[in-house]
Amino acid sequence: QEAEATETASLKSDRYIVVGFSQLGAESDWRSANTESMKETFTTENGYKLILEDGQQKQVNQIAAIRSFIQQDVDYIVLAPVTETGWDTVLQEAKDAGIPVIIVDRMVEVSDEDLFTCWVGSDFELEGRKAAEWLNQYASQKNIAAEEIHIVNIQGTIGSSAQIGRSRGLLKAVNKYGWELMAEVTGDFTQAKGREVMESLLKKYDNINVVYCENDNEACGAIEAIEAAGKKVGSNITDGDIMVISFDGVKQQAMDYVIEDKIACIAECNPLHGPRVKAAIELLEKGKTPDKLSYVDEELFSANETVKAITVDGITYLVTILSK
Ligand code: GYE
Image (cartoon, rainbow, N blue to C red; front, side, top):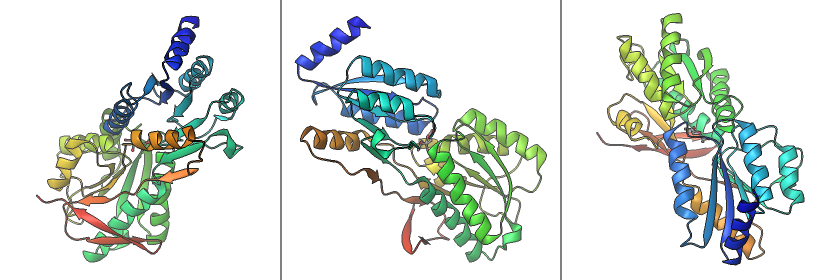
């Protein structure tokens, strides 16, 4: 550790800005793209030294990483938190050490908002509401009654902002439109777990016709399970098809599935936060205050031309129709 501290000190004397990044893991294509974006942005050519720690889905590992960043006296700590709660103590330690903390992607739920400097990420509940509203529009265009819609939700990592927001977005629509939500089971945002969970859901329920997957990796896994069970993924949900709805729009296979109509709709989630975090650091370096919360604008992708636009809270979003 002393060696680390000396190394950091010498880097500082070289006038690099040292950024300690606690990434939560490597569960999905979204996550890989997010890590890549940080690595590409915080290069020595750009005047940075990035110390990257992979938390492997465990908050204890992330807390240990933050503590080691504090010991190394980094200039900034960037945290992509696995879940929302449980950060107060370690963020207080960073604050006491005078190190600004930038939260990225998922959010933290803390007793005092001053425990972090700013946050960049997505409005996950809005993503969920947009995806659910796409389904509502689709059903009304096709004259499909609410009672005919039987949904299972393959959730993300329980307690993560992306899961909480997307599940809430769906639940609001279920309550509003009267669809049947048969099950909510976590798929941990991975393809393997998505497949496994879908396999068991198909054994348990024979009338599932919509699968709401909280990311693309789970969606790809669910599609494998559906096809292995001899069922068809598609949009004719009153005719035996199972419709897949998903989030991210990062994984190439998922985008291909959209074009093949195997994924009906993807609510985009943008992982390219490196430049956004850098912009915040640049402001802080100049003694300015970045916005406390910065949300990224995101689209809906579909190859199905039934729904051209949706409206949530009075705001209309055009659907980006990917051509076949
Ligand atoms: O949607 C999922 C990833 O927190 C927004 O985490 C992120 C989510 C993303 O594993 O693919």
